[in-house]
Length: 188
Image (cartoon, rainbow, N blue to C red; front, side):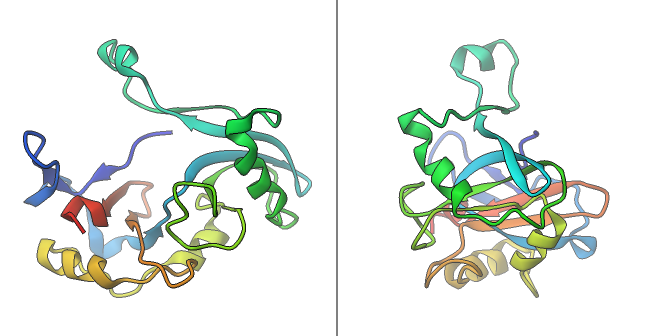
């Protein structure tokens, strides 16, 4: 797993918000824009439509960052662990019967995860790494200039949320590159 770059420069010394300086070399016109979902990053392993392993994202701690470890990784979620119970509730509420065998990254979403910014009624997993599912969150006519993006994000409703605004946008280039921007990057 690799972190996705934010498209604009950030003011690290003050408010951490973005400024107009584009810091990625990315072809937006050839990319597909999707809704960035605000949940808990997970990975499920599927065999014959059944989840056989559930993992959650782990970010490096301060000491690991000082050692040069900057990229996150996955660790096993524990069904008996109190902190993982909503992940497993999301797994049990999601239909994986049509998902091909493999390891699939996604977001655990719902009432007890990240404050439920999408206003969902029940927990669920959304597999953004599965192309057929990612097609469900494609955004049309997304601008990519600073001012237009700020205006777009200020009012853009979530595709899967219940009367909720989106967290942000992830662009997917055919060569596998991805970049992102979030509403909070603009202070929205």
